[in-house]
Image (tube, rainbow, N blue to C red; front, side, top):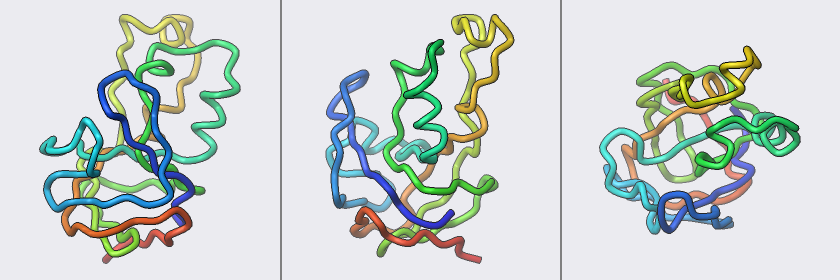
Length: 143
């Protein structure tokens, strides 16, 4: 993981994402203004540019294509493990889940045997230390 490429929030469930150049994250709450604000373990979602491009350019759209869009998009999402801590801007975030659930019974991509990048290229985060994040911030694994 290297650079924060984009920041988004959603005012309500299943509404179009709104792009930001910077955002305020609050400890144990999430991204100010996002409908997930206050969630316990899934305060933020993170994915990579390659996965978002795959979603945009796919001819066949899976169930989650209309339901999911991450808060944070990075240039390179290296495999992180649950409980890993990353620094973004002045914040610290912990990975609470390093995969996205698949709704196999409802998704035609799954039922056709097609590959879906979302399962392994989406992670959930919780804010450990609040602060500001900005597009192009470096992202570092905190050991």
